[in-house]
Length: 63
Image (cartoon, rainbow, N blue to C red):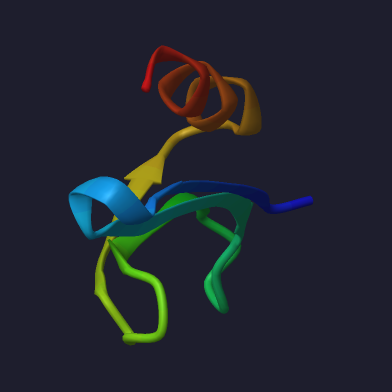
């Protein structure tokens, strides 16, 4: 299940999002996929690989 966070502050012209999702890739490797950026844009993303689901969840929870 993806975790989606938003921060909106019109007085500071701030509209940001952050999304994280733990899952398996096509090769059966556990990954943490992170996306972030300004709401309304594609933003940036990073995918990190982990040996187990628990390692990926721990990494997500640390962020």
